[in-house]
Length: 287
Image (cartoon, rainbow, N blue to C red; front, side, top):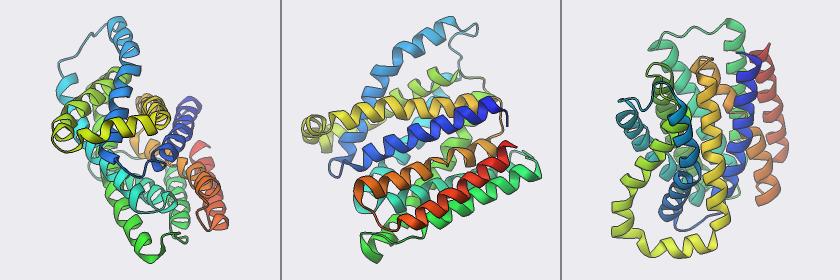
């Protein structure tokens, strides 16, 4: 992995941790909250996407809409599963489990199905990162055993969605050659389209209270979530997904420590040990 690709992925990890902390602050009205930040993402990022597409020699590729639709379906499942997990369990459990299961599945499929072959040192680094995530994930939960089980279950389900969209989006920007910014904004637009019928039927009364109470969180997620993922998509254009996927999970270091600081979640020492192990894995991959 090049130094530029590594820098892009680490910056993405920081952005990702911060927007997840914002999402954790929203305990009620999860569906409306997700819909609101998807709409805000489209509004904030569409101008840049249009400029990028206008300056692209390829223009709007025929594969953009169907590929983004598939990604939108997966991302809706991911966002709603994640938000439900945050409403029922600690961020310090859901987040590291989700970010740990994701790269394990991504690497397994990338190696077994896509035929990618990272070097042995990068493979060891990826394994060390996953080990660090496990250390962070098995700490105590403020919600007790039931909350810990819920966090593990929702985190694992979120991780499966992460693996699915990581592999699909890697295919979209590498094999199909879709521009990351335009692709991601189109994906967000599909998410709004897909969620709107259910929002109108079941959650429309929640939109105004959620927007009024959590407009800061909505704007923060709308800005940082696309930025984090566009940086990852850019990195995937020059680095294999089997390396990008585990390095981006360094976000659990920041996320877990900030969860302890902001929400007073327990077991900070274990979080720090896990963070050191994750950082060691990143160093191995970067060498």
